[in-house]
Image 1 (tube, rainbow, N blue to C red):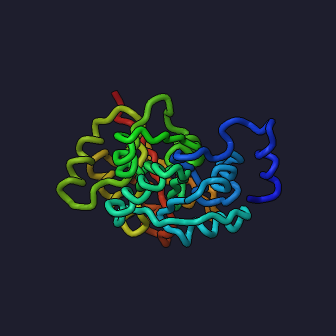
Image 2 (image 1 turned 90 degrees about the vertical axis):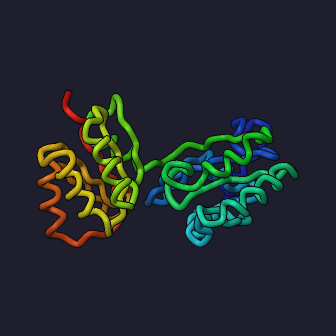
Image 3 (image 1 turned 60 degrees about the horizontal axis):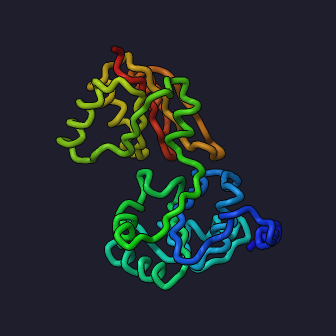
Length: 245
């Protein structure tokens, strides 16, 4: 554990700041800037018995940056069926486990749901360690209404299901938050013009908290024109105005 965290072991340490036996911690990690992590998250990551990571290589870079060395175990969408029982067994043995994703909060468009469903029948304590989430970061700077919003994550890839979701969202009165990969961004922008109309207000946030962070505001039509003329790289979060009532 980094030296500046060692004081958490004193009798006067803040309760709940170090890992407890047999507990799963859902730990939020940075979405880009490695400094965007809470002190409590560092304490938990530095004191658990095992860290279950979506990509162990990615997580190891974060841990190394903060001077933390803990055992890592791979847990992601493609191995959850085999790894969830293994993590359950560790927790039942009294081990403490931190679940992290590559960026942001586990379970928010990332693996976690399957594991929690496997643990809940066994009354395993599950503790959230809150922190960054791209959806909320983009929403906060969007300039669109934030009182009520709906998070859709990634839309289905298959054309039929994707069209159905877009048709349903066309009449959604709340602000909408979507994630999209760079190679499908232009397709999505064109679909938004088609299904939501060319004048719907839209904000596209790219590479949030990273060196080339960019927030572009306009309408579905103007942003389609803008991104058709530039290279498309990075991670994208879209915030869309709700349907006018």
